[in-house]
Image 1: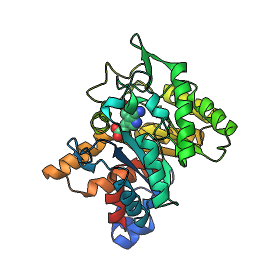
Image 2: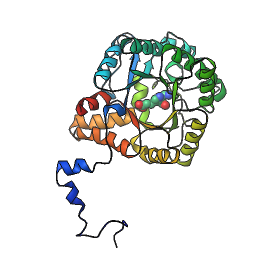
Image 3: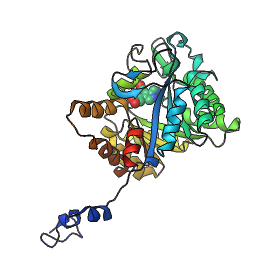
Image 4: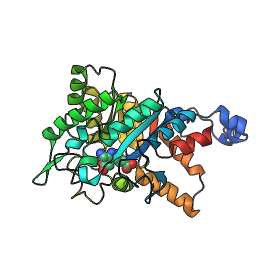
Length: 332
Ligand code: PBG
């Protein structure tokens, strides 16, 4: 008996028949990858001289408000529909109260306006979390060593509104505070931003794979402790499903799983259980592993598209990846 009910036993069935030529293989390909599936995360700095390559992310540099326009033009040319902006702010402007996070003229908001001005059709996604503006590197307000939930959500609301006013198309709350999606959605509706989408970092794990990102935004040296009281334990699957269900019920338009490759089981399950637009974030540490091994000559560059195809096979509608321009160019 064949283990698959409709598969004839060997030799009537020979799966290699359909792998014989490129034409046959193309004919039975189940998933595709296109530049339209990619969201490109970019770092934008306001610090003089910091628009340089990030040592733990070879090939990835920070942009300035001026040079990010060129990145947006490059993305548009390559058919990448969206850019996600991550701010690297001036050390001196990071405080315990994080008020810079909702300053309409902070580096993130200036970058949103710059991209929309340069390439109006480029979708701009943002990051909503306090870490780039926080003196202690956490995503929330910290008091006596505790990351405060409700006080943080109030800050995130202010952040969301100024980002929407700056022209953001998609807000990306990455903070993992409870109740933030509902709060943001209500605030947006009240202020007339009815068409601003929310892609919730719904299943965001407390992961070691974010290390290089924290270097990129300058939060690494500042972070006191870890993020385990708000991000999900990597051992948990059902908890992630509850978080996705909750965020959708509070008004998220799309959900994200993060990190990506080590969590493909979560991607598949979220897609199957909820059927909502599902994205994965191939995070900085995944980029560093792959790009680092390629540069060492230990892996061939083909693994980049293979890694992204895996997300599509796992059910993801799209992927946030630092490889976006490289892959879009290869696909073109
Ligand atoms: C911060 C944030 C992080 C990432 C995106 N937004 C880091 C963290 O939670 O510590 C990670 C992205 C990456 O590693 O590429 N709220």
